[in-house]
Amino acid sequence: MLAERALSAPADAPGWEASPRSVLVGLIGSGIQASKSPALHEREGEAQGLRYLYRLVDLDRLGIGVEAIGELLAAAPRLGFAGFNITHPAKQAVIPLLDDLSPEAEAIGAVNTVVFDGGRRIGHNTDAYGFGESLRRFLPDARLDRVVQIGAGGAGAAVAHAILARGAGALTLVDLDASRAIALAKTLRQRFGDRVAVAVDPPSLAGTDGLINASPVGMARYPGMPVPEPLLHSRLWVADIVYTPLETELLRAARRLGCRTLAGGGMAVFQAVEAFRLFTGIAPDAARMLRHFDSMNAGADLSSTNHTAKGG
Image 1 (cartoon, rainbow, N blue to C red):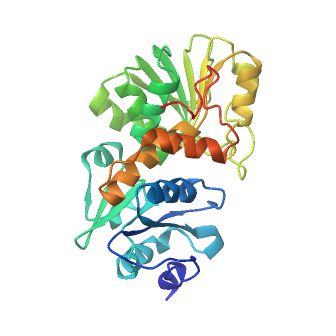
Image 2: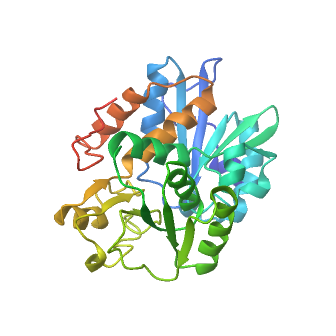
């Protein structure tokens, strides 16, 4: 059975054996071999006294598509999994396969964490918390009067909710799939009113305070920039949710212009903080997880304002 082979018992993990203090989780997505999540979760688990194993279930490596996720979710509890993180391209496709959603996941319309609870599959969204906390810590005084966001997929939905909840006055959504941006804007207006607009192409950023890349563009497998470089200007702050690589082409271009920037590592850490809590029932040490991330990224600078991952 494909799912059971993909999720096979971790016999290849030295010293692994199930015990009352063991936790087995994973990440389902495409092209995820560079993910820092395994090390981030496992090191915090070790610090908490847990036997913690985090496995990558890479759809590309397995040669399967999102249609196989139902089989993976069905097999996982039998093999001892406590849950999964979910990433591109499955954050919305997974929803019909779940028994229940947290209020935030339901409002956002995207799931990045599935917890198995008494035979039920519960979907959560920790991305919104992750982005909001990263912005709060590393760009606390960023102006939010006018913000443009590129990307309206699963991660984009979470980021849009987070930036509006932080008080953005006006948010313009841009996506290659215009229908997706329109659908997200409609959902956001139900909660946040008429502060949300849609643009077919990246608009002029002349009067804009902030630019967020919530698309995959900039990842190693999707190189390039989500907006033409000439649109950038020094009065912008620029945030990217991509963290592999940590410094994307967009952030490099923005820094050359003197923009304040926010790298995707902060969102990656803080969404992991909340996911760890959901998987284990234990509150992790966020400052320690930031230090773990920093150690994996050679002194990561998550923003251009000298707030590094060493901060608490």
